Image 1 (cartoon, rainbow, N blue to C red):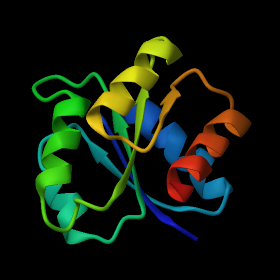
Image 2: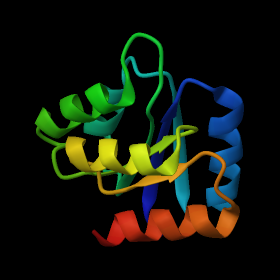
Image 3: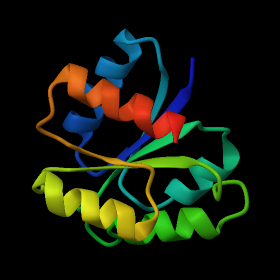
Image 4: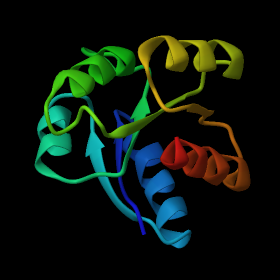
Length: 121
């Protein structure tokens, strides 16, 4: 099963998402906050990074740019995740070169569909 890294500054949401994904059979790691996340991506062979958009100090879309420029992380699939409205979130994801986006309010089935679509892209 694919290996996933969740990067989010909210440890409660990150843990809830980790549990949701582990129940679906994924291997999941969590990195709280944006700092040090590029090292985590570079040091591990993640199939997908689920990246929070709004984090203090370094926003998710900016972190995505850094991940894309790093050698090992350049091919890693990234799914932007946020509580912002789905339309604007999808536009940010497309503009920044993410492999998709999903609302934090999405239900389990919708969330897992977005993960599968990102992995297939």
